[in-house]
Image 1 (cartoon, rainbow, N blue to C red):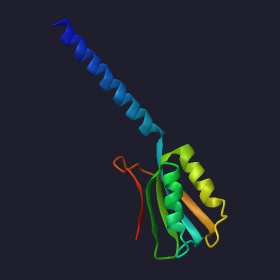
Image 2 (image 1 turned 180 degrees about the vertical axis):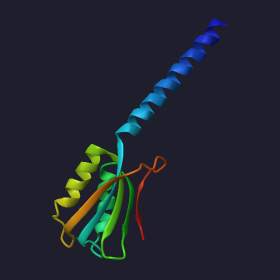
Image 3 (image 1 turned 135 degrees about the vertical axis):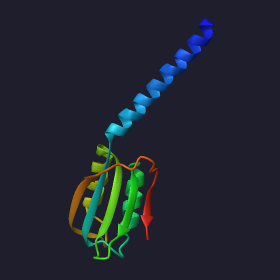
Image 4 (image 1 turned 90 degrees about the vertical axis):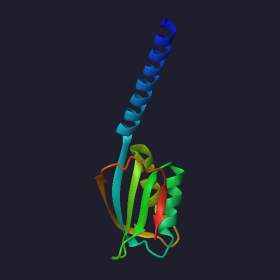
Length: 119
């Protein structure tokens, strides 16, 4: 009987520890909506963002907007998102020209598991 209690106790401790880790990771996660203005459509910008997002293990979506801008929803830890933005904004791409961008924090999408390009 004592062995069964010990097994249940160890399982309970493991589950609590696992849930704590998941909760802690979720606290570190953040999601932003970023709108880029400039020469960002028809120049490979969406696929460039896809490549950089995967480099930093970020999730989200990138899509063209009707007004010529590009919208990105990006999710991950703040350090990786900052590195992503730094790479995008260094602007040493041949045809991509970013004139301005806006950024706003938005709610997380917990079940999201990849970054995708929407057509």
